[in-house]
Image (cartoon, rainbow, N blue to C red):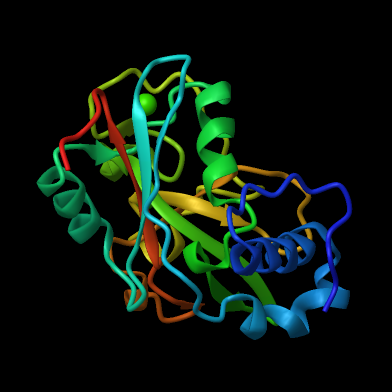
Length: 214
Ligand SMILES: [Ca+2]
Ligand SMILES: [Ca+2]
């Protein structure tokens, strides 16, 4: 198992720290070398549901694990039931902050395989395409909160509206790409894709404008 050099782990206990080192090693190295380790890397570990405040806007963020996989609409409803909303990443600093909560955490990631390649599928975010019929693949995207969509950080080649059904956003690392905190378009239920073996995302990120009561 490879380990990462220079990764600043945010794990808080020895087990999480070890897992963080493993997944971040995978994410940072060549897939040609490391792809064989993926199944080990996504092995189940302790679920973390820490509430973390981003000082810049005062909002709170929580990454929620759904081990069996979850659709975007289910995740949106779950976020609302918690009193928040799927995270809106309206600036590079906000996107980088949220990325720091999920990078190197194997519990939050699964895989999508196609054409001999395997991408890393991360959590759902509050990104959806509301006017897709006339502006595929890149037009008509917005945030669930209605905040302006003026910043984006799509993964290479995304969005691509695969099989003409991809209208919801999530974190994705494309195999072979060194880009971080990048986004992808998926269907509400990624199991609907027939040409790609895309598992349902196993986590979603909730944002709260004020600290939720627990
Ligand atoms: Ca936000
Ligand atoms: Ca689309």
